[in-house]
Amino acid sequence: MSDFVLPTRRRRLWPVFIMPILVVVLAAAWSAFWFYAASKVDENVDAWRAREAAAGRTYDCADRSVAGFPFRLEVRCTGVSVALLAQTAGQAAAQPINAKLGEILVVAQIYDPKLLIAEFKAPAVLSDRGQPAMVVNWSTARSSIVGLPGPPDRADIVFDDASVDRIAASVQAPIARAKHIELHGRNAESSTPDKPVIEAALQIGGGSIQDLHPALAVPFDADIRAQLSGLKDFSPKPWPARFRELQAAGGRVEIVQSRIQQGDLISVASGSLGLTAAGNLDGEVQMTVAGLEKVIPALGIDKLLEMGVPQSALDRFAPGVKSADVNNVLGALDRAIPGLGKVVRQNASAGVTAGVNSLGTEAMLEGRKARSFPLKFVDGAVMMGSLKVAQIPPLF
Image (cartoon, rainbow, N blue to C red; front, top):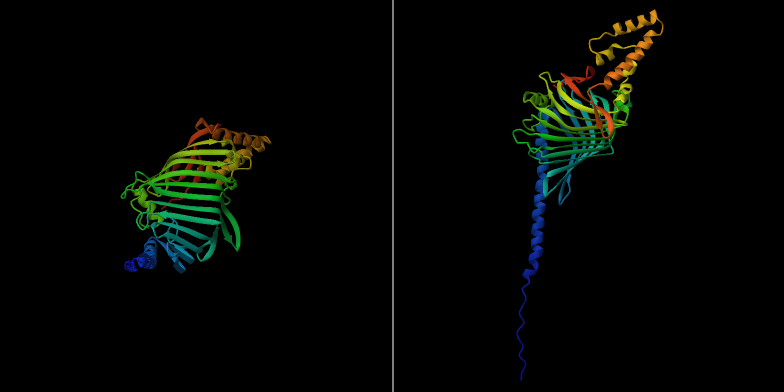
């Protein structure tokens, strides 16, 4: 019996190459898409710069590059310079404030282009009238923004080990310090495209301000949450124009929650602030303070009468009262009965302390005795009861 052999069928080879060919085609398409997106970066950045320049904020970059292939877009800008024109109520239009920054790196994922993450390289040097005025430093600075190129849905910025120094005759003097700063903003649930409402949160850890008052040089922690209404849109505008728009729309800042702690002093607050037609803050914040007795020596109110009252202090704490009148009366008491003026000064300072402690009503704050009282903003003046503790300049 002869053997019967079936003929061998030839296997088709082309299916073997389908998957590699598809991979090559997809890779080529992805590469083309990435390079197209990279080519649009310059166009989008230039459009953004033009919008910002119209609002008085001019951004320049000495060298700009795009990298990150295949899954990211990394835009690196070195030699950054910023010119801020007419961003404050008193800033002269012909004298912009200039800032220089070493480098900014902005990263976007190809699959999520509406999320931008940025890192900033210190230091930033601010100049006024062509001369360095301040230098800002940090160990790390990061930000993120969601929603571009349309109106942003959320924005965040974080600084670690931040410092601000004034430059005078090539010597740096400290102005402010903070171990950690976070600022967050997002659209509130009640926000609509024609009437946006912004929720904001500011957190400061280990902050201090050396240039205003010795009381502020002691480190403090702050956690402030607020809501801003009255915006019309998010188009770029100078800040004075934005504030004027807010005032015309009846916009307000609702302080939902504020907690500040400085050593044994704890303060919580909530309230509402608006703007007058002249651009001054106006409104009321209800405060509850534990450790209020420490505010008096910290502010130096108890020393005013003991050392003689300067007019500048009276203008701040008792507007309209003349320093010469107070000091003349106390001096006359000393001449009539030596030492009587000093006794009156000391008793008066004790009276000031008692008067401040009698503000508002008794309260409890985090298990401690406290005082609850309103802090009023009257056309820019900050009033603690009958005491004027500060004057805030107009915002436009």
